[in-house]
Image (cartoon, rainbow, N blue to C red; front, side, top):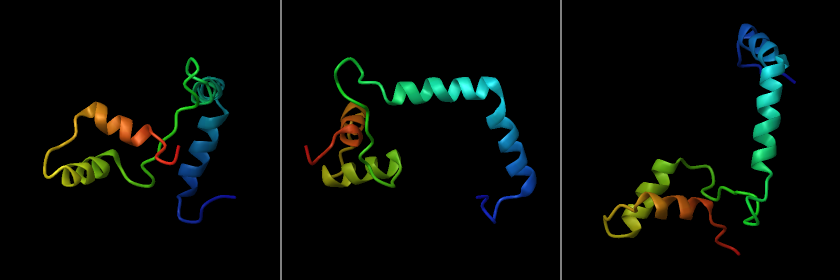
Length: 84
């Protein structure tokens, strides 16, 4: 099903792109990597919801009284399941 608000030339270009053998190979590799167990650490997940890394950084800065998180804290926050 094609989106109604996307130009037909763009749709046709995307179809052509996704049929290229090199695109299919890259997609398969990336899919395999996303599904890997990462050496026993489990599949990587993103838990920030529908917000950008910048938005979560701003939230964490506010939560910490104006002190921005370092990059490791930010990545751990976004990639850690808070429920488990």
